[in-house]
Image (tube, rainbow, N blue to C red):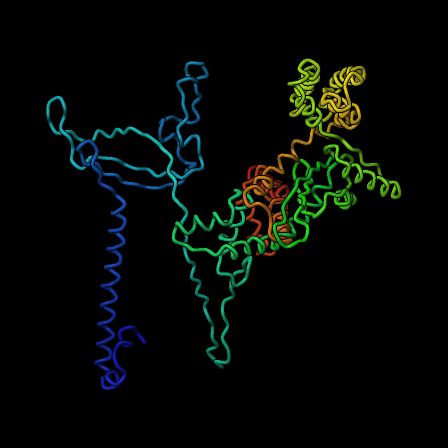
Amino acid sequence: MTDALRIIPVDILKSLDKKDLITLLEGEQDIRQKMQTEIELLKSANENLKDQVIEVNGKYVRLKSKIFERSSEKSRDPVTKKDPKRKKSTSPKARKRTQKSLSEKYPNTPIVEQNISLTEEPNCPCCQDQMSDSGLTEVTEYLEVTPKKYSIIRQQRVKYRCQKCYGSLVTAPNPPRVKAGSAYSDAFILDVALSKYCDLIPIERYATIAKRLGIDLPQNSLIGLTHHLAGFVKSVYDLLRKEVLSLRAVHADETRHKMLEGDENPNWYLWGFSNKFSCYFEYHDTRAGKVASTILLESFCQVLVSDVFSGYLKAVNDVNKNRIEKKIKNLIAAFCNSHSRRKFKEVESKFEDEAGFYIEQYKKIYAIEKVCKNISPNRRKKFRRKMLAIFTKMRLKAKAEIERYSSNSGMYIALNYFLNNFEGLTVFIKNPHVAIDNNSQERLLRSPVIGRKTWLGTHSRKGAETAAILFSIVESCKLNFIDPRKYFKDLVNDLHNGSPPYTPRQYKLAKQKSCYLAVFGT
């Protein structure tokens, strides 16, 4: 029944004959056509509203806006009007004059082009004659931002019926979701989770921002969404564990963490393990070395880079006992030179000359290491051999001077630290695949530590597990210079389509391979 017929009482419809009903339906169709025409006119008027007329210096100016994406077919820059293939001058004066426009600095950003013209053609300031459009323009650029907008997706799933037996209805299936039946889309869930674990925005603040935009979001529901996402991508977290422990050198570090509720022990610890391409976190209610032992027993690494913490020394001993039985090469403990240098830096104010010597030597060592970063492992090994003489010089001087200081002296502690851990501090010289310090792992702990300060801790064991999973994946994306939001979007879509899980490292390699095949073919 049509809309027009619905509003007419049934008894009146029954009294109408066939001719009257046809006339009524034809009239309704005419009304629908007129309404459609009006809708099109309103749409056109709405488009025209985008053109603004403003007053500038007593003159009315019209702004016409048009948005377009970057085009590979454009042969000339929209600002400089120059051919990009043409070689630029390399003279110092030319370099000084040349300044990149915003469209050059941010080539992937959409451009909204505004044509600004006067509503009335001006008169010439010289002869007072009316002027006309010269066809020339002056271009300026500035950055614009559009605030976040929320929308409701209304899905209408078609129902199919049998025209023969009318025995059943079949409904088109609901597309797969991270949380089936949820009031929130996958994109919304990703935005909430990555706002917290990538951008370090607390859930409470996220909800406050949304409320200012007219959406009142329950915080507990948002926290639950992060748990669902963590469970959905846990297979990637398991792959990261294997990936971290598969390379020759593994970095390890830990930091304190507060368990606000959900456990008798409020003092928990975040344990982090990483290599060049992957990062893996676990939260535990203890700082005992058994945590590191359990993880490293599964590894095939040759070197563990860490600070001089007894828990890691215990882990190395436990792993080596197991490897002796299996006749596998022992795990070597390498120590962080930044910690050693820091000991001398802390006492520099009191022992300026004595500590200054070791600080200067470390400057020479790190100068050589800076050269070693971008060269092959074989060349790196040759360069690092130059450091051995510097370390030996420091060791001989430390042995000769340490007895001059009291055991409670800061200088004594710094020298003792250096001498007792000399073998571990110099492991990297012999192995080109080992880093000079543990700074890379400490940097990976930065986001969880900032998050700890922001939201104070976790409220349950489930929250700690969620934080470990999502921080591991996000920080692994950063190690591979991948946008976490793009990675998560592609990962969730691929998992919905039945693809196997993949780590950020595998994702990057797959992208590089597809680009290579697109350019060079098979």
